[in-house]
Amino acid sequence: KSYRLNALLNSMPDILFVLNGCGVILEFFTNSNELLLMPHSKVVGANVSDVLGKDDTLIIIDMIKKVLCGEIELATHDYSHTVLGEVRHFEARITPSGLDNEVLAIVRDLTHEKTRNEEFKKFELVTSRAIDAITISDKNGFITWVNDGFIKLTGYSLQEVIGKKPKSFLQGEATDPETKKILSNAIKKVEPVIVEILNYRKNKESYWIELSINPVFNHDNQLELSLIHISEPTRQAEI
Image (cartoon, one colour):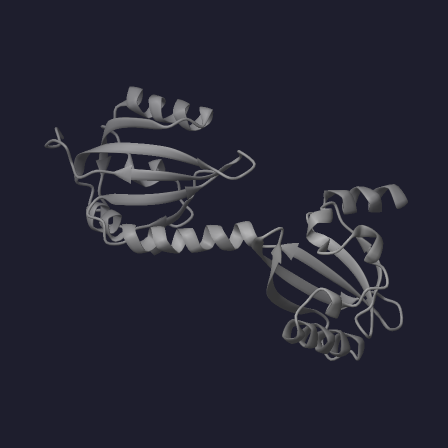
């Protein structure tokens, strides 16, 4: 059990604190010392007020009290703090530890996620009014978002395509098998690709497009999503 617990803790991206009812740190575990916001040796015995500002401290202490008295099972609070000259964004989750006058505080760094969400909002704002069709698929190839250009071009609404793979409803009997193979190989190899392909609208009308797929990687160089750009039909459909 001890081995499993250590393996679990080692795999967590979070900082785990054990706090008493006054917000004093009794124990902690982390794989990222830079996020402790104080020297490693001074963590135990410190109070949350030694790290957080007055407003955030009051919120955390209130959360601890509500959890300890059984008013709530889980309390969460988002806050920001400067780490090594950079503003970082965190989420703190407070939950009972199972012992009297103690809670577990799980702190996660949300900086990358928050930055990504803000960037996506900017991207969505720009591309939502684009004439060309643009879609975003997750790392498994399932559609998560399309712009108005896609809706106008294909006849499908956002609700109709979310969670589907584009090929499952855009390609048809006259779509060139060799072109489909080129696309499939590029997707498997996680490589960018540009092809001309015959697609089908919702009303079964066929049309030619130039299709561009560009994989997008996260900070760990892992595939996060695919950006798909579909230009206006480049030539009259042959079917």
